[in-house]
Length: 199
View 1 (spheres, helix red, strand yellow):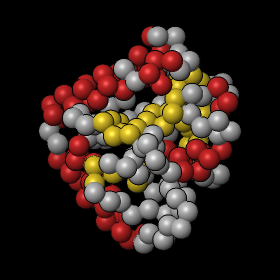
View 2 (spheres, one colour):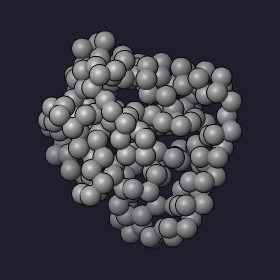
View 3 (tube, helix red, strand yellow):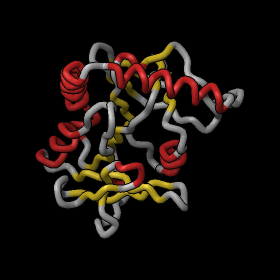
């Protein structure tokens, strides 16, 4: 990512609005059908199947629905970690969740997140990360929501986990405006295609 020219914030904002609008426009039945197809592909990944500790997130709005993925992780005895937003420190605190009904509460922006009293995750144990995003390219470049939380989190891993994003086809762009700190993912899975960052 060295040598990358800083992207204009306005360009990122415009693209986010366009992609979120396209995602919102997908009928609920279509999103549900696509999410089921995406989930099946993610669960079949060797990196996920071999992982004993995974970091996921709680989806909101028209995002890819992570419910089935999170439930599978717990039912298969994996340690499931979810992020809690610390707005003042501009970071994600990672907590272990054992029960998706009782261990969560409404958090920042109305997104469900672990209660603060849940055990902190050992980040060195995390082997697989399913992370959100707004837009992606076929080269696995990622445009997030603008908070930079994951772009700050990922470089902090001494041993980089597998980074996987699940997205609908309408979220794949030819290019996205990027900065030097923007992190690529290893794999982007859509309902029809599978993109791998092999570079």
